[in-house]
Amino acid sequence: MKRFAEIPSPLGPILVTSEEAVLTRLYLKYDRVPTGDGWTEDASAFRELAAQLDGYWTGGRTTFDVPIRAEGTVFQKRVWAALSEIPYGTTVSYGELATAIGKPRAVRAVGRANAWNPISIIVPCHRVIGRDGSLTGYGGGIDNKRRLLELEGIHFVPATEAEGAPFVSP
Image (cartoon, rainbow, N blue to C red; front, side, top):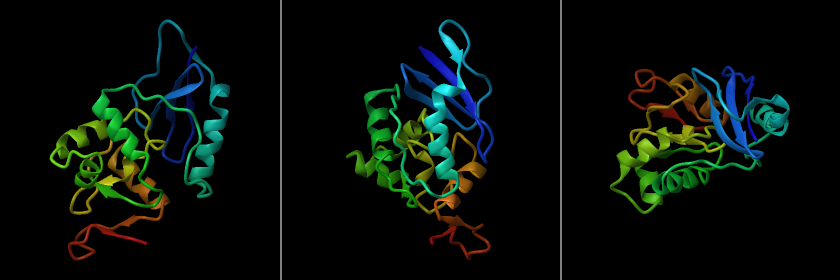
């Protein structure tokens, strides 16, 4: 059975989908909900996920324990698996992520795979930043990326205020 719901969050409503009780999507910004054959709106199917997200928002949860399935290419899945290994409260650059998967010259491809991550927050693509430490692209919006990183204890300041340093680590 294919289910979806909107879960409230400090960043605005989050759209989540599941198939056969496995989370398949988590989007901060979206313009439509699933429709058509087989889709059912069912907030009760996401109670555990909502509780875990609440724990994350309040600072008590640093990892998630929900079954997920992200559909993508072999390369995308490799990048998403590496994203899942980035610890709470830390960041890596796109280049470091490319090196971690054994493809140090595939920085742009890693960036594209990161952008197509269908299960944000749980698969923490927000923890990937530019080589110079700057906040770069995020499907959920740069402001939300900043807020997620700040929630995890990583504080960014405008470069002009930090004499060229785009972020200040805890």
